[in-house]
Amino acid sequence: MTFTFLDVAIFVAFFAVVLGLSLYQSRGRKGSEQYFLGGRALPWWLIGVSVVAANISTEQFVGMAGQAAGNVGLAVASWQLIGTAGIVFSAFFFLPRFLRAGIYTIPEFLEYRYNTACRILMSVLTVIIYAGVTAAAVLYSGATALKTIFDVNHNAAVAMIAAIALGYVLWGGLLAAVWADLLQGSALLIGGLITLAIGVWMCGGPTEFYQTNTEKMRLLLPQTHEELPWRVLVSGMWIPIIYYCGLNQFIMQRSLAAKSLRDGQLGVIFAGALWLLVPLAVVMPGIVAHQLYGDQIQRIDQAYPLLVRHLIPQGLRGFIFAALAGAVISSLASMLNSASTIFTIDLYKRLVDRRADERRLVFVGRLATIACLAAACAVATSGALEGGVFKFIQEFQGYVSPGIVAAFVFGLIVRRAPPAAGLAALLLSAPIYGVMHFFGVMGWLGCERLVYLDRMFLTLIALVLVMSAITIASPLAKPRSLPVKRELEMRPAASVVAAGALVVAGVAAYFILFA
Image 1 (cartoon, helix red, strand yellow):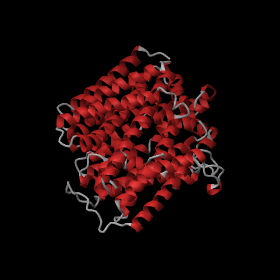
Image 2: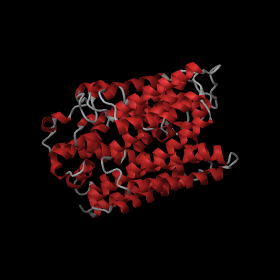
Image 3: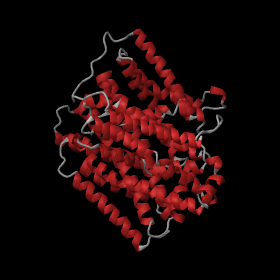
Image 4: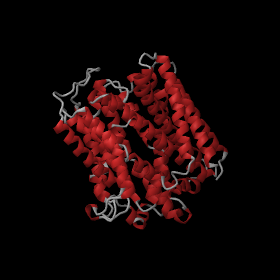
């Protein structure tokens, strides 16, 4: 496929506006709080759009659309729908505590609740996951899109995406990423909806499309399904959802930069409302691709790029491609900023140089960004993700997410849990999950083998039992006092409660319509 002059003009204009706005808005931000948290002054609407843009990238457009084109269908949208409920939960359960403590990073909170060892361990695990899994997946999926649509060399595409993302995250930190997200997130959803509309029309209209793909248009799959049986929606899926929506620096960093609790809560709830568009903008186009071009899909990750290559008319190609490219760069820049924040604040400042001034912290953060990007590029070009990018992300996050969820949720509910309980959860999560991953546990709930979400659920149960035993044997003499660095009204405003209820109702409507 080739670009027309109009396509090129739209593409160049879009990126000129994005880069110009993000660099202008982040000018003069020199201190560590300005660089890592945008001065803690983000309004709710900017937080919401930024969370969506940071979350939805080519690992969704390539990975989720690919699974929709494969044997999962619409059910893969359960991730985003359950995630919508999860982010509302996080707005009420985690966010008030985090904002009141005035933390820079999520691992920092573990030091206040448990001890320094827990903070350091979570920081190391998080940086490894960001560099080796999530950032690598974004690079790989973005390069896959370029290769499928334009026949660009895979490694060259990885290098090009990495260079652009590195440029503006080094310049402006979080604020540059957030303002770029505002335009790129909007364009991403609009582009996805345009693609769906054209695709459904090419399939003969909504009625014809639904009747042809009835089996793929179900959110609840049989108990025997090999990847996403319905049981995991009420068990294992909640573990990565709580981790991702409430305990993930990549997502929560925007909320930690909120100018008030109300802005932080409304921001993530607004993001949840926008996530309700994902089944339409991301997942259903994958089903369209299967109907129209199923015989050309050699790997499921090619579904959405093939749709863009064959279906989008001249003139719109530049816009759709700019939205996809912008999504890659936006998500990658956000992950790099979060990884560098954790490395700088939780590892370098805590262990190496407690007296480091603001300029040195920003400098170290930029070096960490470069190092994480280099590691992500190495994984993205290694061939490790060729089995399916979305499954790769979820499988390998399963090593750490049960331990992190257990440490936070158990520690906040059971206030006398000692530091040893939190440390045990973080240390044992990967070994327990790894044993089940490589050796298997048969016969659970009558199924022939475990899916990865079953392994996460069993890992969490085991960790909670271990933490309970440690707490019973050696409880804290009195609950540990958490810091209060920002005076906040902990009770949510009525408008926040109403917004959360409406978003959860939207999730319920999807399951009623497509169960």
